[in-house]
Amino acid sequence: MTEEVMKNISLEVVRERLLGHVHQEIPYGIEHRLMDWKELRDGSLRIEQYLITPKLSQRKILVGKKGYNIG
Image (cartoon, rainbow, N blue to C red; front, top):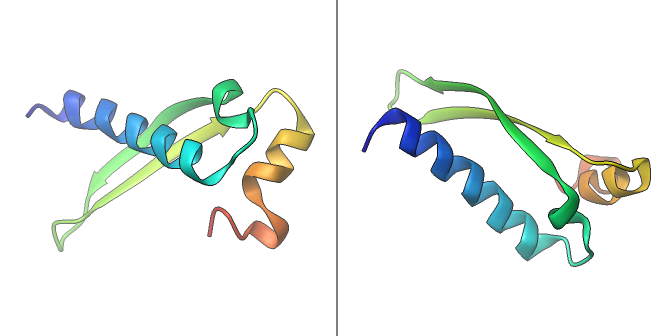
């Protein structure tokens, strides 16, 4: 697989996980972008994505109380 294909897969995995964890309409309105992709020394990946919501109320639900959903 090319790195570009793997990056696209990472975006889809995040969207799928959002659909599974947030049961409102929020995942459908989220725009997400891959910002950084690094292979670490131990062979794992560090993936940074920006999740953009159209409303502050959606952002609060997505993040969760005290950052619980993203931590």
